[in-house]
Amino acid sequence: MVGKKPGVETYNEGGVWKNRVQGNQRASSTHDTKAQAQAAGRDMAKGRSTEHIIKKMDGTIGEKNSYGNDSHPPKG
Image (tube, rainbow, N blue to C red; front, top):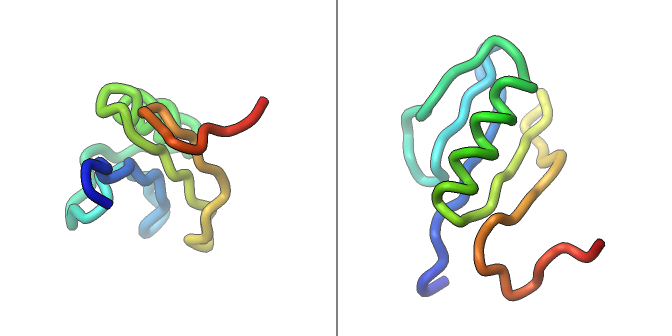
């Protein structure tokens, strides 16, 4: 993974939606709704030119979007 920047995760913890850069312990931002957190996470990922991982309430990955120089960009 040389040169690959850590992605931005949007996740729920204790009923609060949060964003953090993968590998960090602390959230970068907190939000009341998933929609607010997703919008902020998307902006973070775009600004960092990296991937945005959106998790469901149960912690499983619901969606991934890439905003960087991805060698396998999504089709469509």
